[in-house]
Image (tube, rainbow, N blue to C red):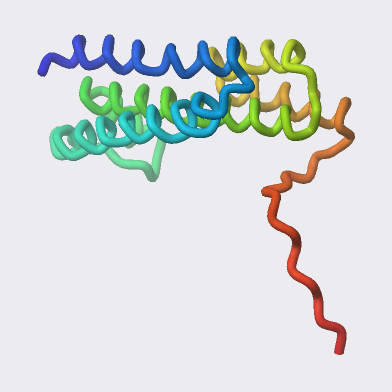
Length: 154
């Protein structure tokens, strides 16, 4: 299949997930299944396909130097794989932000700018959310909902 068509499909695939995060943050199917699991899993399959079919064509490519990464991204298939990586991880992080904010009682209207920035510039949006989280919830510790193990005194 043509890479341009796959690129268009991959970009379109994440849009419903982002729309659900912004417009329906309380819908568990969107915030607990579609955005964090289903769409990133589909993108992961595409990523594996692109990496397997493109990695051998990147002469001098690798992850141990900037020049090596540049050589990888000179191959369209691997450049696209890098883009798919961003699409999957940014959506996953956006879904975590929505769930975490709801758990901490942070109003969703305050979270929307964080989501927009995560969509456009992943780490910037996540950083803004951490600042918001610290200012409102006074929490920086990431709680996974599992109680800490009891310590045994000797």
